[in-house]
Image 1: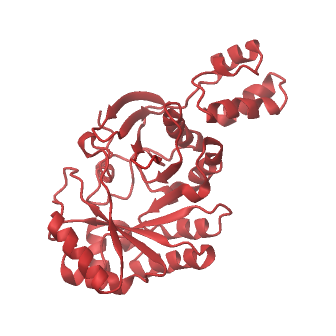
Image 2 (image 1 turned 90 degrees about the horizontal axis):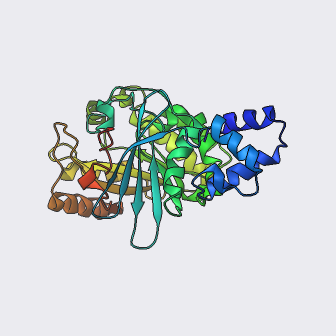
Length: 326
């Protein structure tokens, strides 16, 4: 729902301010349409139906994975493709991965979204409507800004959406923003009044390799990125999640594990190793044996690591696979 359009429409109709709060409360609770908002007058519901589309996005395709993951492909009003993913876990968690941009301008070489043509930043309402699509299916309680785009390049839209998430049942402490290392955004998040988690896509323990697979490193090299992350930790006292995608013969050697363990202070960072999901790039994923050996080398040198549970790979919904394909 375009919340600004909602406010303007209600004001033009001479309605009191609380009407917007009523409409949003129904929407955030999972109402499927205006007709369910029984404490709004029928004539007003009809007016909203005619003048304020219930979603800023139109659903183009939905795919369901064997593990229960759901991927939705949307189009914006101007035809931009956007994808979002609902992940279901055995412990009952329901986590939504949302996009902050249509496409991505940063062209990380292992990521399918980076190979897309960049469209534009999404509005806060367009971000929220990804979540609301799944909220109308079932309750959700976790969210990551880890879909299409670099969230820190659209932080106004991201934080605008994040402020509304508790109304949907997602607290700020269960909300995370993943960045490739966009330093100005990390610093803004550090000063933000919401206790949102920070995740860093690292993928290499030194600048030369990181620049080769992630061109953004030329603009914000490792030392500057880690300084910003450590500033976040100093202010928030919440550890930074580090994501490290495992690429066979590229970043999965023993010496790189040692360098990574020396680079990351375990008091500040939590490391998550990510099995590579096929994206049509030049890379192949590290074998499970190589991942286990890398993890053992890290822990041998004092840095604990977990291996991410891959969700939705069979529908191209896993980490790095979002590319707006039905």
